[in-house]
Image 1 (tube, one colour):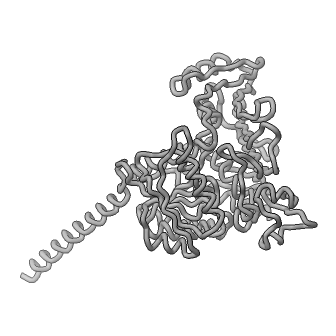
Image 2 (cartoon, rainbow, N blue to C red):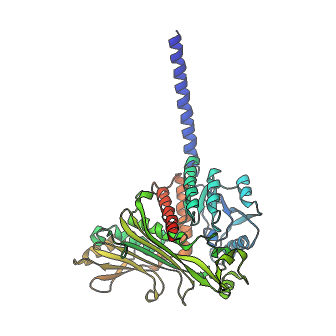
Image 3 (cartoon, rainbow, N blue to C red):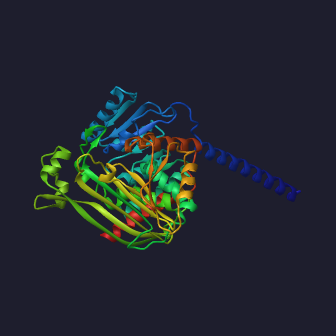
Length: 464
């Protein structure tokens, strides 16, 4: 009798445990699939928008995103400039947007956002000094995060970012950074061609002197955005708040190296070996500083970087490293102002056993990116290259080869694919909205984000 009673109790316990486990599983699944694609269900909160990238994700409207956007920021010029940019989108003559900003200004802006929690997705794009802390606390609160780069600017931030990814997984929310350069058409086609073995062969191993894959980006402090001269906040030039160039723009370049050399492959920190890293400054006179910030003098927090009246900004950096045994190089250069007619530029080469795939954006290209294919093997690539372009044309109609020599071609790309850097923010946002509906990121995205920030922050350690 006693044994029968024990068996009954055990059966009830197992049944209750199974039901409870099923309930928890269902709740977790519901949490991860809380978005259905319904109109206006994504409610955006913008945190301390000190960078113009915060506005660019709102340059267009999205059916899934509610037009009411809550902004939380300290009072000051940064948030005022952000509001003006959104107002500019709302009042433009062609395809005006209809965003309705609800703005809170105060020193307790972050605590206020977490307490009120009027949205389910937070965008942060601005001062990077506390960005990783904000990201971690936001996912801890069960809020999705759509972050501008960089999400970590030093090794301490990186350790916290790893914890943030763990918290996001535990809370069923998505933490994702905005990698716009994956949407640049020449880079997309460079990646596509590198996967066609009849044309590219295999990616070479390369060497430190001649890496298998190189990415170089040249940027400018003074430039035009949305047709107007860009006014940068003074803190942008403080590497303790913005981060050095080696961990800032290089985030994009390291991301592209991973994305092109090992597409959709799950990477780990053990795959990375930093060979060398270096950093150097861009010098800004008081006149230059005033032109780009509208300030008459350097703030007190920049005085540590001023020598003989000239501001020295560690905005330049280079990383030589191996990724799964393949030699790669990522370097970023910041000049003060671009040449007449020029913009930020990108150079890239992928070295294959049959050809090199080269993106150039210099004067001869009219400062617009151009993709070249240059044969490296003795065999004639004409037939296989023509076949490859014909295949790619089913996905990208209008592609055409231009023969420049016996072993060199240019790939002519229709203008309809050249949408520009600002439009890429909308494309990334649309992709993120799809991820929200699916309730997950692709399997490789989170581990590869971790590897990316490990690479940049480790390189900064070495460079210092």
